[in-house]
Structures are given as structure tokens and as C-alpha cells.
Image 1 (cartoon, rainbow, N blue to C red):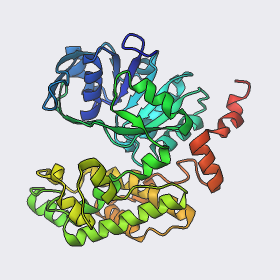
Image 2: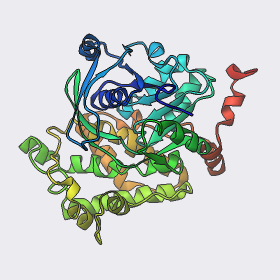
Image 3: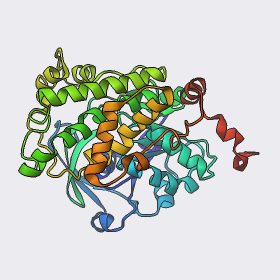
Image 4: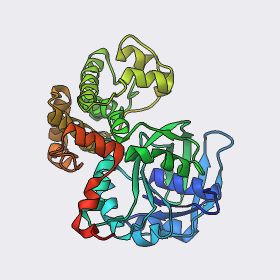
Length: 382
């Protein structure tokens, strides 16, 4: 039975979310290490011996100074002797983290991406195996991030909200109960998701973030983002484009043999917001009131959500013969806006390890596991 005394966590990433998670774990009585690739981000935390957690959420949420014994830029030191590795970095850094920890992984460790965006667990597992790591590890991904938080300064983080329920799924799917049981010693918020294809394709941020930012680019630049992003930025015309993108996402999931919830279904489940159209449902959602737009178009809603969310959806669609013209248009416009070929930089069926597989092989891989590990010459005899 995992307990506070026996379960040790590593939090990989010392940004807004990573410091919130490491501090929360420490205040709950868990041994949590904190890793970041850049030393500058860690200096104040190392000097203080931990982080101070402030909170505007429920009174029961722990607050105060959270001591952290291991704060390091050494990935081996960060994960040594730790059962659960919580990856809390932008999805664009998932591959880097996987490369850094691969030489140090041992049997029994659980890696959880917070969140995975689209295809995160697939990309991380492929990267780890390509690096020659044969350890019996589990890679899992959360559908979204647990906290709404902000670093006030490098050693002080404020938590505004903690979500009630977040699906998490393991690769392979039959190991999801094992992952959820391990996480619940600290986080009862995690519930079993169907599988990583479901958590990946239920990534609603892929619909709400890139297109709204691209299509409001003139307004963002002229107002410095001084308008309500969801309630003013999503007009009837823009919502029609979002509905078209959402339909393509759901059709890609169906082409793979999985069911993805629509954006309207998600709004109803998450916020009790209903409507005959996506526009009506968005207007009925009071949870988005007052959320301002990004101050600049050079924002993660494009730089992260296009290559790590829209590009893999389009690539999966191409694999199963489902056209994604609306999604393709936003990928193209975002690439032009940033001067970056996001289709070339983003996740594809190749980087996810799915290229050349039949639908039967993909479903077996998602649900049952990785036969490729047994066939890896580096793993023979293990």
C-alpha cells in the first residue's frame, strides 16, 4: 500500500505548474524532488530550501512554506529512488525530458505527463525506447492540468484553483488502474481515462486555443489583449470555424475506432454549459467570464497547441483517410504568423511511433502494450 512514507515523487519542470505541484506534495507530507534544466530558475528555491505556496482556492488547500530536499538540474539525481515522475513542462519539451531521464529509468517507475496534449504518452515512450532504455516503466498522461497557478516570484507560487476530477490514462490501457491507484495516495482528483488515444483526442484546447488566437490576432495586437478571450473573442462567425475544426477532430477519432466527445459535450460536462450551438454553449459558460486574451500573438496557444495538438490530429487524419481542411488552415496561418513551419516541427504519426501500423496494430498497442520492446536488440536477454 502506497503511503506518504513510502511514495516518493519527482516533479520535472519548475515553472508555474511544477512549483505548485512540488510545493503541494511537500505540504501534504510527501518527499518530492524538483528538476529544471536551467539553473537560474532554481537558485532562489535552492537558497530558500523550498517554495512558499499561496492559495485563493478552497480553505482545505494547504498553504505555507514547502521544503524541498532535492532541487536540481541533474535528471538522474531528481528521479533516483522515486516511484512517480510528474512531468510538468510544455508539451514541446516532452521529448527533451524523455531523452534526459531515459538513461536513469528503472523498473517500476511511473511517468505522468501533466498534461499530454495530443500524443504525449506515445511520443515519450517512443523517445525512451529509441534511446535504448528497456526498463519496465509505465507512461501515462492526464487530459488536462490539475492546477490553475502562477509563480509570483521564483520561490513563491499562488494556486487559484484545483480541479475536482481529471482523467488519466496509461500506455498500455490495462495499466491505468495501477497508475490511478499509485497517484491517489496524494491526488484523489485523478480518475481512470479510457486510453491515451481518448485523452489525446479529447484535448479541447486544440479547438479553443489556436484558432481563437489566430483569428483575433489584429484585436490582440491593437488592444494588447485587453478583451475577454472566450466571451468576446468567440463570435458567431468564429464559433462556426471552431465547430468545423471540432467535427474534424471527432471524425479523426472515429476513423481510429475511438469516440471523442464534442466541444459542446465537454462544456456541458465541465461547466454545465448547454446550447444548441457551440456559440450558445460558450455564452452560457460563466466559468470563462473575465479571462483575458493573451497580450501577444507569440503565445503558447499557438507555439504549443498547434505543433503538439493540431498537427498530430491532422497527421492521424491523413493516416486514416479523414480530411482536416479547417484544422490545416489554422496550422498554416499560425505557421505564417510565427514564421515557423509547425507542421514540420510538430508531432506526427512518425514521431508517435504509429507510422506503418494497421488500425488493428494501433489498437493493440494502445490497449495491450508494446511488443516492440521485446524485439529491441538492446533488450535481448533482459
